[in-house]
Amino acid sequence: MNMNKKILVVNLVPILFSIGGCTANQKGQIKQKMRDKSTAHKCVLLNDSAFQYITKYNFKHDAKDLDTALFLLKQATLCDTNYFVAYSNMANVYNLMQNYKVEIETLNKMLMLNKNNWWILTRKGLAYQKLNNAESAKKIYYSVDSLYQVAMGNDPSDINLIMNYIMF
Image (cartoon, rainbow, N blue to C red; front, side, top):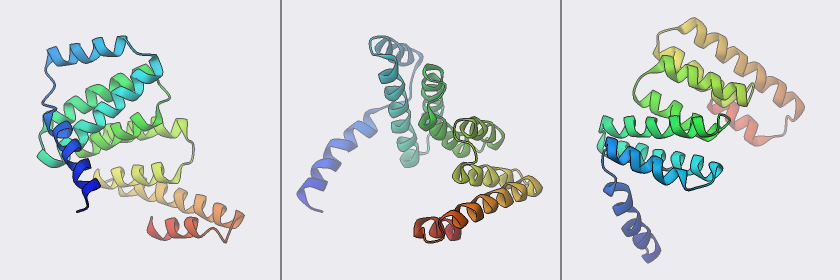
């Protein structure tokens, strides 16, 4: 590992692991800090803080981290109801919690912001599969296939589109 990577790891590790489970007092402190910033900045801070808890969960698998991330993401989406990235992170949290019905509801909110997005639709199909609802998953996958066929008809030389079609 070169020196720059070592410095990055040394600087990131304490940040990622110093964040404990969020108590009621800490939630209050987070809310207070958010009052002092602009609305857009607040939303980004909430989402970024939630992402840190999701990352921490990936290392420690402590459900409290997902609860805290979800709390922060709900605040971020209340702050800005069109905050696509926060909804995406929220869908990831619901997936990690294996709460696929609410994941689908969150993906539907994302589809209202970005209609006919193949990536969101594919995730929705996967969630239906996890709920053992093969018919709904199949319908979604066919719609994704149709979207790809139209897109490839518009630009058959788009190598990235072809790669995504094959991979997804």
